[in-house]
Image 1 (cartoon, rainbow, N blue to C red):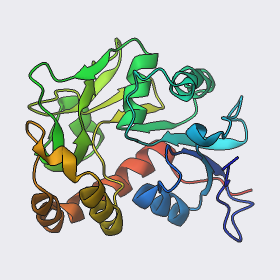
Image 2 (image 1 turned 180 degrees about the horizontal axis):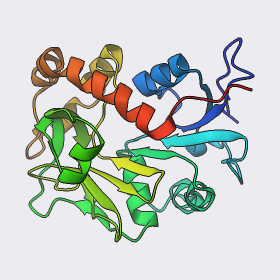
Image 3 (image 1 turned 90 degrees about the vertical axis):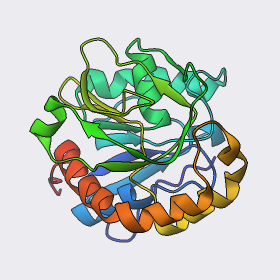
Image 4 (image 1 turned 60 degrees about the horizontal axis):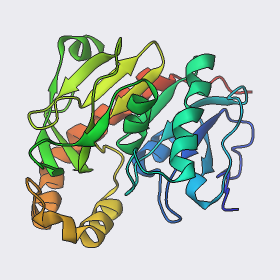
Length: 244
């Protein structure tokens, strides 16, 4: 079992956010940092490594499912189990955020298909983002965001589209009051982006992908706005914790 239940000293009395990662050395990055700074604790689980997901979120203030190299359509048992588990936050109306793979799992759970671009395009690097009218009513959105994916998702029925892009039109959505999905990555620290650029270099030859230097140069230009947006976005989803 690799269940860390990341609880630093002094976190035990903080409301917990279930934090679902998909590789042994994956990190919640800036999402984790900002949630900790806001007063939450992180309960980190890695289902591919054997960690169970809770049957209820009654002891959690919400949940985040992050990305990973796998597909939401993969046959592995943990992919199916995570996708089905989403009935828990939806039934209990607990705040939930899906990022990239997590958003695709949410879309699948709600009946939206997940798959590659019909022309084989990928989004790997920095790409323009445009908020919808519904998105603008919630907050200001960044004009450029960071991606690292080869598949996208259909907008589930009754979900509200919050942001769109040219190659993959469904970039962010909200379902009901408390379920959110985003296709892009605002959580990467500088160190995380460097690791992704090194370890994912073979994907830079895919149609539409940007070269590694463009990833790093784009960060210097666009990341400050993206980080500020992430701070507002997490506050909109999870609010301020009620300390116990």
